[in-house]
Length: 445
Image (cartoon, rainbow, N blue to C red; front, side, top):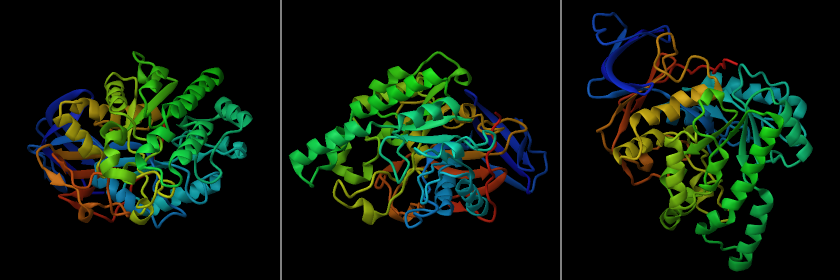
């Protein structure tokens, strides 16, 4: 493995911003110091005028393989991820077939080992009838168990109360949940059909999948976790009301119940449906501007613990449909970091907080072994960004297989210039450098 020397950069790491160089050898950060220009390395990057951050760890993506590869593949989406400064991802089990056995889980690891440019981990999926398989999960090499407590793909809606209680009481690792109440959604859907027939406007999505649907499910999950002593992580919080369910003022390492915010809930609001339509149709729905504001404040004050993408691509043909036919989800891994850096330019969030919530805290929350920080001895997962390098998103520069983005037409102020994955330079100057693969994440549990 080639050695790499990064000179003259500005590091953003562990709540500090400072000038330093970094020496990388054998895939690890060997030295962080102010003057390493005398050191020998196979390759040198001059990062003058740029910021160096730990690569992002995305704890929620849907890369669609196996079974849905007309939408995306681990190969294509990992390319988009590293172009966006994401060096590690944790991928969801609602592929086809659903990842409900240890054998199917291993199949995904085998695909990633061959094809992923980024580091990777995969969730074990839970259903109403696979508890025995869930309990076989090894917490040291699996990121977590995923439970859909809301509408889902295939056999993955877990609504059997006995099964839920058994999972929460016995899961060998962290439980990550999608929380929306299916009965509330069904009732709201029936009301929408009464009003609009099959031609439901897209702006009714946050009315159908409303605050009540989210809170009813997430509050139930929190109550069950407290009852059973489970380690619970609730994904993609979309309402201000849910924030009261989570604690602040407690060190992350001591929290039993944690929460995630996604970049689309920090960026868009219901005012954007008129322009974006199905391109911002996600589950849970993008809701009011007041929800967006309070979710961001909860990120800043540590009530919400991490930022992720919920990257979930569909084809243009699939998305350009009427309300009930257009699937929920969209591609986000390539544009998450640029969007967060735009929010920094807008004075909404600091660079230190972006790094904390998208790298440090994810590593701490999931107990990822030796990643998520710029530290000597840690794996060299690094993104280098130019804060003053504007570029416009268009379909010609979207790397996700689906070929579109909800950010199309937006000019970001900052750009990722280099991405290093486990010591390998995989992205530089707008070009992917292939020939190496990421590593399977390990967990210090």
